[in-house]
Image (tube, one colour):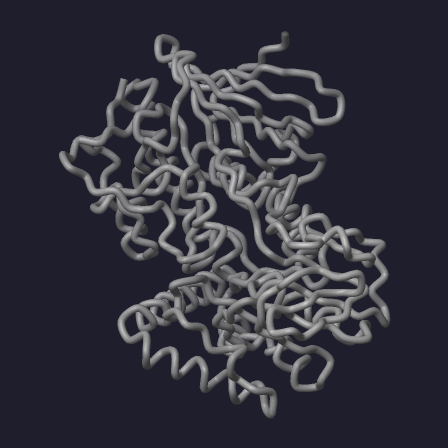
Length: 482
């Protein structure tokens, strides 16, 4: 049995994990840390997914780090560019040498007498077990199952003689040239794949049960381009980032306050993009804007593919799979050589690792989340999670800034542990993620809760979080220091 001690263990070498490490190097340079990564490379989502056209659906000035400028002209970057950016950050801040690859976390146990975590990992290849001990855990392992995406139980799938594939397990050797392709789904992945393959296939059809709100934005931000020309790089980055944060917040709040007006405004924009392609029933959702996440398409590429007749959208339900495609409930048949099931992710909190407190099982579903970054009753364990209505990294950056201040406070007072405790009587319970999406509903029984009042309530608001995490004192009666 091999035991390794370090002050901080960061779980995951994706966008959040590398960001957390860079923040430590910048703000708490005396802290010793290791990064445990279950795969063989850094980048998380951006190195795992290989499907055609994979890109960010948030602009890179807010999806990138606060401390590292985004110097590309494109606002919405492909996976290769994002990976390059993450690698550059890891090299600039000397993070790479701290990463231990092929370390999949199986369990965590906190010993409150020693104020220490023991982390058990296995090597996915050799099955070798290793034990690490640390004072703090930064959980940056993301929110979904890295091994399997979500595929519904399709009736008659075994009948289909063609290729059936989930984008999470994309085969890079898949030849779709001149093939008939059906993409099941209407979310970000589907609207990315369709225009990316449209010019190569015989025909591609996006099959959706119900529509999603889609917004087309230019991939080159002219205002950002001007700001970069006239101002020094770091100041320009900060200014563009601030502009985009406020633009996103304004749009979100307008959608929440005047949903009917904003729906009509969005649909008018879509109609203009579509030309002769019909708006109804394919692009007019029956829910309010931002009840589910918006799909962003750079330069309207998805709409252009439809307008040119390279792609099609069918809004219908699947009755049964046949040998050559899909029979729909309307009686229509969609012929296909390849069917892509862009049906979403499976949520998996903390990578499915088991958590115990003094060797007793710790049930995360009974806990509330404090300021979006700590589970109640769980000491020295920080959760990195992003926004659902804005860029993921905006929140994970703020989380790092807050933890940096908290670590300095602990050192100053010579405290060894901190945990959050619910002191409010009759704290109301709300679902952790306030989105009406399928993947959220499927996972609601596996997630922690949020309360109905601050600091147990997630406001999904950058300004409120900036105040709470970067300005307000870290001292709080709900935090227990030992």
